[in-house]
Image (cartoon, rainbow, N blue to C red; front, side, top):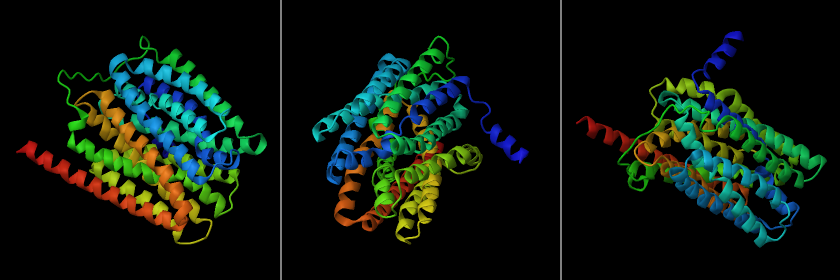
Length: 405
């Protein structure tokens, strides 16, 4: 047991102090994002919106994310990642607190759009900061540490969120989310000020190429949109499935979603450390991760046994643990070809676009086709994603051979 523990600790060695601080800031911030998994339940139960209304609101959520990610990338290249992160975090905190006071469909669409616009300006800036504070050989593990913080936050957040809903009300979630964003801003200002932080990897590129003309990166982005559409069902239609079909309470749903974060916290870093020492390519690993995600949806139709929910969650967690770190590392590697803010903004936008279509499509399909048919459709979508990633892998191999010749 001691050897296992020491091996686990050793997977974290070599990461910079700044990356650790960035992970802690992310943990504080993400621990408060307990609103998001319960948003569809809040809108249907407290505000009496229909499933179609919720679908459109979640599309506004995704659209705000697209605009915010694009704007965050532009501003990062112009004024730097630090200023963007500070302004995004504190503004998000204030807006999340204000969101609870919106009651009409139109007001909530506008409100959630503005919240996500400001909140997702943070993402491309954070990715560029992560790249700057990491040695080149540590970037994948640095990304994994940030994801570890995110998932630990998501593990704690839904569980605490379920307790808050049960004992207080949904409105308490908005207060906690807003306050944690503001606290994260204070910590960021204190420990990651440019005068205090040590930059380990400054990319100098006098003739940067545009991400919009990087064919491999564009194939990758389309695949990430498809992956995101399937993955995001776990944060919109899946909680409704748990409640309506398997009769889980909000507390039960919070614990089940928290299982995902706990598994990732326990296993992702050792898994990534091991995979980095194998001969698998990043694109090949993303293929395997996407297959696992597809299985996690498909198995739900195999039986009505409630334990299948845990099995599906474990398949999803494995797919997420592999695909996200290596897709992020892939994007960071490609970003060295051009403006880092532009590349990382497009990477963030891929998932923002997924937000636009995932929740809306999922809600409409569940409403019109039922859960079983919806899960079959999303399994096929995961299959298309696997095909695209395989094409990407073949394209990269062809380009590599051309450079050798």
